[in-house]
Amino acid sequence: MFLSVIIPSYRPNTWFWQCLNSIRKQTLASDLFEIIIVLNGDKEPFYSQIKDYICKNLFDLNINFIYTNKASVSNARNIGIDNAKGEYVTFIDDDDYVSSCYLEELYNIALSGKIGVSNVIAFIDEDNSIVDYYISNLFQKLKERQDVPLMKARSFMSVPVAKILPLEIIGTRRFNVRYKNGEDSLFMFSISDKIKKMTLTSSEAIYYRRIREGAATTRKRSVFEKTMNRIKLLGSYICIYMKNPVCYNLPFFLSRIVATIYRMLIFARV
Image (cartoon, rainbow, N blue to C red; front, side, top):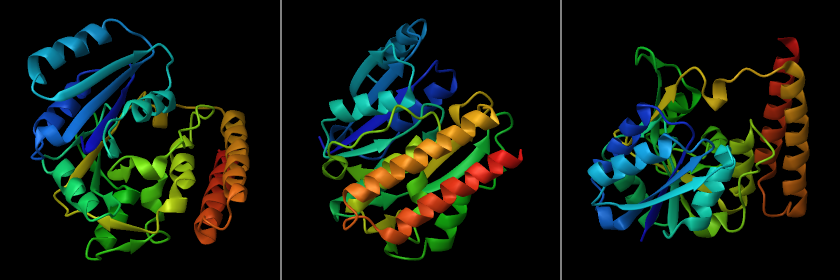
């Protein structure tokens, strides 16, 4: 098994079938990847619905369907990593989907020993309208370059999706379940000690990010909650860096600190 596709799912809706269907249509040979679905939180009717969909539509794919009663996307991703059989992993959120050549292009980049990053298109769930998105903008800016240094690619490192990562690089590092916001960027920073450059796919390999009401990234939180979360994040970034400062990119570390403080100041003004 070369690649493990990890999909955390919490109270999935109709968009989840679009996600799974996009994986079913991949051009990459099905014997090269497995799909790990980690349903977290409420079990029914979601468990039975997913099980039924797998039996009817994904019976010819390698599926590992896991349930945990702990409602946490970070914990679900960690469970996916712990159960991954592939040499590489890629994360897809259950309300997003990917283009048909997505896995194959990331696979080809991984074969060359590089970290692959795909194009990203963000859209509004209600009307499918495309919206301006900072990762999409960066991809378009850098798409003509063969290899992109970590600092220039730092916006890609704010999320774990839209890329392929060697399980060897992740090692024992996991998503921090203490955080409800900012945990993605923290995880990516923690594994950045092994990432020097990133290689972009073609524009045809697309990760479609759905922006919808009720998603974890759009849930409203109090100013106090946001501020305390960012203060704790600062401490976690510093702890990770200080444990092995020689291996981490100092400018990249400082960019994470500045970004966290900036977001904290923005919250305070709201």
